[in-house]
Image 1: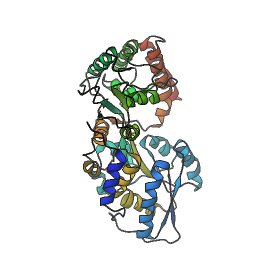
Image 2 (image 1 turned 60 degrees about the vertical axis):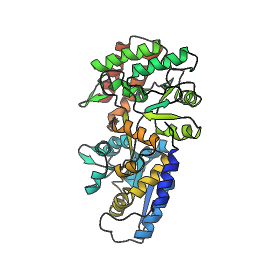
Image 3 (image 1 turned 90 degrees about the vertical axis):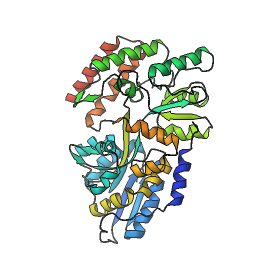
Image 4 (image 1 turned 180 degrees about the horizontal axis):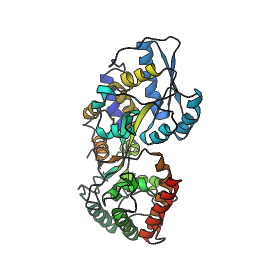
Length: 401
C-alpha cells in the first residue's frame, strides 16, 4: 500500500475551505473587555491561533492562546483554576477527565445536536459519571504498520504475523519478527493491550480491576511464550523498534499515528491496519480521545462555550487540527473526506475498533505495577500468573487507599 504524508492531505483540504466557522447557536453579545484564554501544547497552539483570529473577527473578543508543556498542563490547570488564574479552556486527552472532575475545575457542556456528528466512542470518552465535559477533536490508538515489501499479505491473527516474521528472520531478510515496543524500565501495557483484550481481559471490567482474571492469566502465559521465542524483548524500545521498521529490519511495527509522518517521509511503503488478535476474541486497543474542556472557574463561560461549540466543533477547525497533529479527526464527516489517505484510514479503523482508555482517577494507580509485572514476565523473573496476581493485589490496595 502506498503511504500518504498525513499533513499534506490535511493542508490540501484546508486550501479548499476557509477557517471561519458558521455559528451553530445564537451569537452572544460581544463584550469588548472580555478576553478568553486557551492553554494548549505546541502541536495545537498554531492551528488554534487561526481559530482565535476567526473568533475575534466574528465576535470582537480576543482569544489568547498560551502554549504549555503537555507534561505540566493538567497539573498547572488544577492548581491555578480554583484561584481564577487559569485559562477559560484547555486542550488535552480524555484520560485527564476523572482527575479534572475530581478537582472541580471543568464544567459540563451540552453538545446538543452537535453530538450526532461524532462517533459514540469519542463521546463516551468525554463523559464522566453521566455528564459530558469535553468536545472531542481527534481519536488515536496503536495499530499494526506492515512493510508491504517484506510482508505483502495482511495477517489475520497475531500467530500468523509471528510465523511470517520469524521466517523472514530465519531467511536473513529481517532482524526482528515484529517491532513490539517495550520500555525497559516500565514495560508496555499500552502497546500490549490489544493482545490482552483478545484473550478477553480488560483493565477494568464492570468497574473492577480485570488484569488477573482468567483471560488476563492466559495472556500472561502467552506473553512469556512470546519472550521465550524472542518475539518480544526489553531491548526493543519504542525508538529502536521504529528505527528497525524504517530501515527494513522488521516487517511489522505496533505504534500510533505520531510515528507515521516521519515514516512516510522516509519513502518506506507500508500499510496501516488493526493489530490482529492473539486470542479468540477481537483485539481492542486503548483509544485516546483528544479534546477541549471549559474551565468551571471561567469568568466568561458563555463566550467559552461559544468558542467551543461554534468554532472548535466545526469541520474547518478539525481539518486544521488534523493537519497540525496527524491524529484521525473525531468528526465523522472530516474523516470521510480523508478516506483517500490510507494511512489515516488505517489508524481510524484501528481506533474505532478499540475502547477508550479509562478516564477514572484510579488509572493513576494501575500503570506502574501493571507495566512492571509485564516486564518481569518478559524477562523471565517469576511465574507469569503469580506476577500478574501480585501486581493486581498491589493495584487494588492503592485504589482502596
